[in-house]
Image 1 (tube, rainbow, N blue to C red):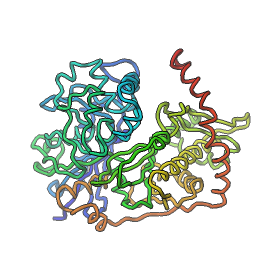
Image 2 (image 1 turned 45 degrees about the horizontal axis):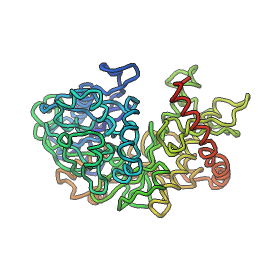
Image 3 (image 1 turned 135 degrees about the vertical axis):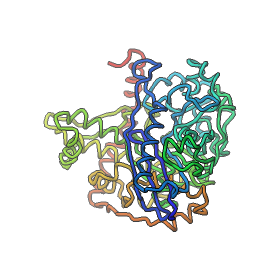
Length: 512
């Protein structure tokens, strides 16, 4: 019997399961839509992930995968990946005591300010490698302490979204370093929980699971989970990792010359590094650090809003177009030159490359003759200028420029966006032949955890990796550099005082 590996990916827009051979070949993959829901316990606008709904989607995806392969016993290991920050308090019996608070939910802005009063943002960054974002787990836990202490009193363990799935599969409480990196509670250099940050967030250290390395076997599929998923009881369950690091692994990147560009709702530019040494300059440029899925390595990354900006353009400028045809029409019309229209994609206040300058989403250069296609084009170019800016910022960290970008995620399906990335950055842009690199990365970790691969080096040697390259147009690159250096790059600093005044007025008067 040919051994197979199962990866599960809990994404913000879809939940997926995929089965792979040891050569990395995708046998089957199943996806179900995912979305946050209104908090039944909260105020209007509060959003959560329903734990039962998540688990039911995972079970359905796995069942359909097993139906496709016909033999559950062929699966020799399973690992789960997912997005960071969002976690759930669970009782000793594993019952969720409150839904996962979604990263879409802004309820913890006050807690961010409280933690920053207790520990300076500079010290937080030096310990955790992270900016103090409202969505970080530390702020969520402080919110529970301030508003729902009854929940924390009953909490046995805090589990992140992928860890909850691991518990449902195996009955074991666990986490690992990459997902713990997103909490703002981990001492990144030591790869262990930080007493200083736990104290600032008023967290009982006893509720934090041990943070192992990605690719560690934690248990096995229980009889109950087998009945719900169709997996064979006793199938090993292995820690996966944060989806960013897992995508790096699945994309076959383990060299300093190739940087990963994960493009979806968010765009995450990732470089692999051998040491964690954050500086004030890195913090000012909006860079974050996390533990890598490979032991002894870290990643330096820039988190940028991306696909959500394109979705905003579609929903506001293409309401007359049927949803099924909206994106196609957008990108056809975006072939029109932007003609002096610029967009600064600061759509998430308090996050992104220029958060320290209070940047807001900005469109510059509108005229009465400006078309909606030019707005789309300006949005795509603005996202690529943002990417170029952060390539320069990370270059200052690692000491060398990338030789190429490897794009994964939904953005690799858009030829115009890919070409603009190449033309504006001046770098070759690669896309992989495997459309499910995050699932593959999880499957690789499952294989390492059960010993079917000695390590990631052996896994990479056994997996066939096919890539296609989009070459930059160097003439257009030269033209774009003028726009970048003379208009786009100076905008955040030039408008910083205006953005700050606007932010202060919104804080006082509320949105208008």
